[in-house]
Image (cartoon, rainbow, N blue to C red):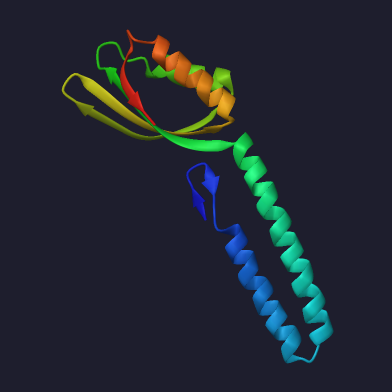
Length: 133
């Protein structure tokens, strides 16, 4: 399933397909094949679990809420900075309330790049009224 910048549920879907194939193999009398395929599937799923945890450390997604003053709206320079740092982003919401403009972003990339973004936001006290993630 696709949700913004991330995809989820692939392992579950593939496991269901494998279970169906194993059931068909047993149903036609190919028990040895089903046993070998079961072992192979378990090895692959275990290895992919470790790989997924490794890649999650390199690439994580956060939801960032950021508030700008409507008269000093720094959203263009903020999005330019996201691109310059090398983070992928999707603007989810924009809401105006009084003199504030609140944006909600889904941002994905490495932890180091996200930390650089947070440091940038801290430095932008004149443009950024508040942020949370």
